Length: 466
Image 1 (cartoon, rainbow, N blue to C red):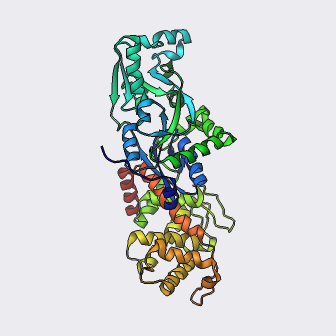
Image 2: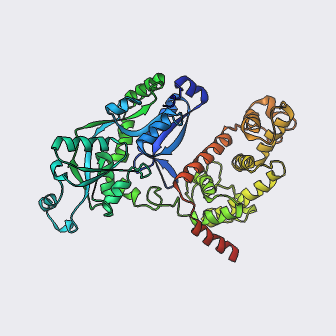
Image 3: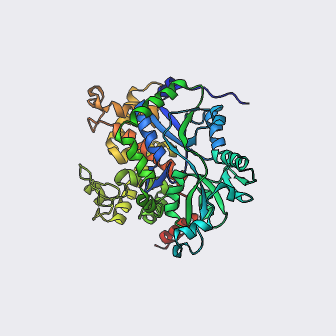
């Protein structure tokens, strides 16, 4: 057995971020209209704020695999909706419970269920555990559902054919397979089953298979300080309205959940980020970028709102100032196509400019994004300051820890009054955070949104034809 990775709260805080292992499903973590959302995700953001660290998300699936990742140090907290049970207590330390739920049988209603009374529907369905004798019931491998079905088989003294599906099936995949008729029965937690039943009205999730069970997150057993900090935070947040607001948003708002799940912009069921994806893909081809990177910029600028306007007067999807927009061919900044075309033109200009001195494309991207956000002159000032004041370990073609550091010094009069500085004072935390936010969102989009090769080929043909 491999040794368990050791890292507790003090080292996590010193490192500056906490890494959470999460499941990609319709309640825990997903992308909707370009924005990361989910019960686990929202709470993790609040926890990271409480600990004064950044949050890094790693998407995984399969409880057994996720526990192995936790033990290996690939995450610091296992933010799955875990059922507390004895076998898992041997492996991980559970946090304070979030809430209670219970396991239910997921099955299809009769074909003509809309014309039947509830009594007739009940008569056609499995309503007692003994009725599962000889039937095949699918569960996720390594979950509490598998354990419960084996125990239930012993309790009723009859054989239930428990089929443990591979960990590559996502947590809601079995529910979907029941709805589409691929399998007959599956087991799910009531909270998740209810959300999915709103989307699949042909499903029945009313047959209870377990007693009430506590749901919690997990950490390594050798992280007692982290566990204590999470427990204290959980106890406090559950006293405030915030917790129930978040809980109700994902588990008690069926209309909202249904609207979200039916949307093309919901990453769990669709593959779109905004109504402007086609235009963004065209622009990305001009830039030579992954379209999801440009989409992350657009979201960061305007949250895909074509009529957004900043306090400084920047407008449109790409939040361009009027003079910059005119320079790159946009007259109506509320027109999404003009805004994206002009924004892409500006980004291309910045990329060509920085190519002269920043040959590495990954590094150059950071300079381009910083310039787009704060203006080219401020970033040039920071580069000059780096060249003037840096020691041999620093490099004016490197962003992190080098040019970035001197950009942040532009709020200090010792630096912004330097004769070589042309743009003057700048409280430049914003462009530094801007780069991180765009690149983090891009990674989220890469995980959840497929790069549609056929669609991109159509875009390429369209651009070439013009």
